[in-house]
Length: 78
Image (tube, rainbow, N blue to C red; front, side, top):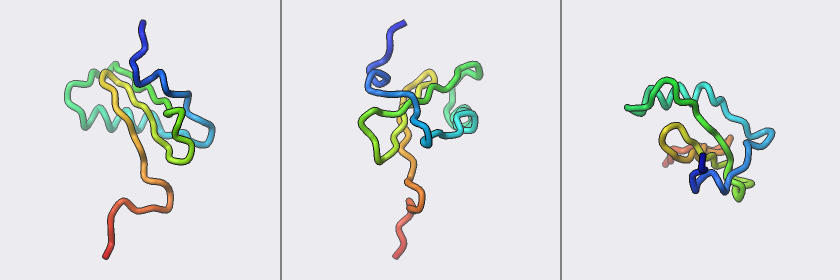
């Protein structure tokens, strides 16, 4: 089995940077049409992102997840 280009520049999720993979997998199944129930989510971290957590996701399709850092709001207030 060959690895995709995205997974080459990744490392296992670092201690302290874990995310709830089962909850994310369930959310993706609910939100993305065409994912098969037996497809498991692969989560890794990009090796070059040390301060801003960015995750590589693969479950039939590939993507990335960059959560909002703790203590920051994604909405702008005036």
